[in-house]
Length: 145
Image 1: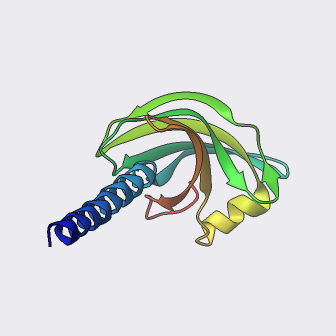
Image 2: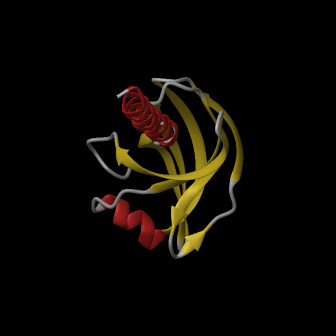
């Protein structure tokens, strides 16, 4: 009886340990899932491209601070170099930054028809560096200033 109680205790302890590890893993991956929104502050047309200044709102739902080191708009047909950026988003808080980008005119027109731009971020978190793509919702009720 004593031997089987020990086995049962060891088994329960092992299962409990797996649940704790799974919870930590889920928490670590959830810490980096940002959400975001944008508002067009200014735009200038330049032939086949548009230069836009965006006010970007990012929300960090995780408990730990995240540091954004670089960012750019992400588009499958055009990959612009990452821009250096120094932005800290506190845990369970939001941050606002204003950034300028050059966007091809067809892509900008898709935004005007409801397509959501995506932001590619290089994030430095307590768990190490990572990249993340954040789909930006439009804060403006009126599109395309």
